[in-house]
Image (cartoon, rainbow, N blue to C red; front, side):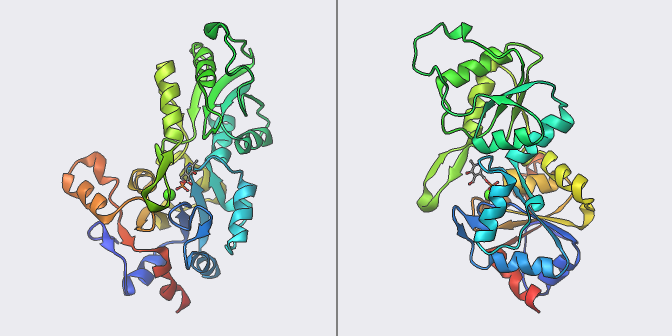
Length: 306
Ligand code: PLP
Ligand code: CA
């Protein structure tokens, strides 16, 4: 339906676009909430979409929460959301290791307790979560004790990341049969007031650099996140919309999977960023040009209330 890309979505076009889809995938941070604050109007948009018979899913690269934790957060903010509609990278990494890698063995986890819980839920044991027990002690770095059952190194957001963890990851990955899986590659987590903190991509890059290996990543823009949703809910990609605030993760995921794409300006990327990709004419960058954009998803409200 998008005649030209990067179209401002307004007026009758909103209803027309919504009528052309059955399912909507929402990125979370910068789209439906910012940190701990819901984007004004977002809960009504999601609840009305569902009332209008649309399937709604929450797709986030943030690996610090389980599906249950996200469902609780969504409920607190007034979103009508079920646990099985949430696809975070903690859960999707567990799915990937279980169903794609068919991992037989343990994980060395650079990540959160939430990741540990999602791994354990599918029967995968881990070692490594929390501060490294021998951090700071002077030892023979190249001969740290390793768990012989570890068959994969998995990297997500880890507030306890340290030189010792990086070293341990390298020692495991010296075995070419040991897998390297990362949750996502977001390098910066933007905060209010133009501030930012390092994202998981920085930790993953450190591990990749040390191990001289490239990780398989699970999160957006890898199509695996969409595959997870599609395989569980039988989506028709031609009638599916991806809504996001980042061109290089959300919009590219949508393009990679053949979905309609909508950029919202309540987060990271701007229309100028999208136009720069479009004007570059570079095929690789064209996947980062959304079909449509809105200032906020609250702009969908009038079409849903009518
Ligand atoms: N990773 C972490 C650790 C985060 O805190 C966030 C945002 O809060 C993200 C990734 C990006 O999340 P999303 O994909 O919902 O924008
Ligand atoms: Ca986002």
